[in-house]
Length: 199
Image (cartoon, rainbow, N blue to C red; front, side, top):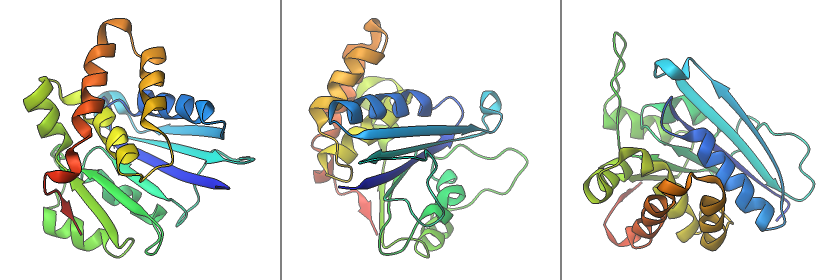
């Protein structure tokens, strides 16, 4: 593998930066060259937060070019629309948390609009109710991001071994939260058998 281009997007407070650190550390454990970058849009006020992560052999730039993402993970489904132009129809996989944070004072988009819009940028769109699952099973919505990157690993949507994600969690997450995060990893393991919506 020469390179893999990943983008994680969502709303401020959903843990994108920690997810990028976990994945970057996992890449190092896999002996990949890795570069990361992040952009914040008033993240403390629920603004958009976008993380780029590129890894493989001899990576020189941290930014994913338009139409060049291999995988786009969106922690909030309306935010997937902001990331769409990084997608390419025959290349990109969209992995989307089936969860919405209403835009106060702005236009909100329904599921049909989101799905039809994303189909212009990718043939492979997966919606997973990660927030709902983590809330029901672990009583913690913020774990939806760890759930999704683990799901991506288990489903081989990303060339990173789940063992290295677990190791990275143990190294980077505060000790009192390690066990809970590892439970989110395990919770993602049988996720492909739950009938998630793949377009």
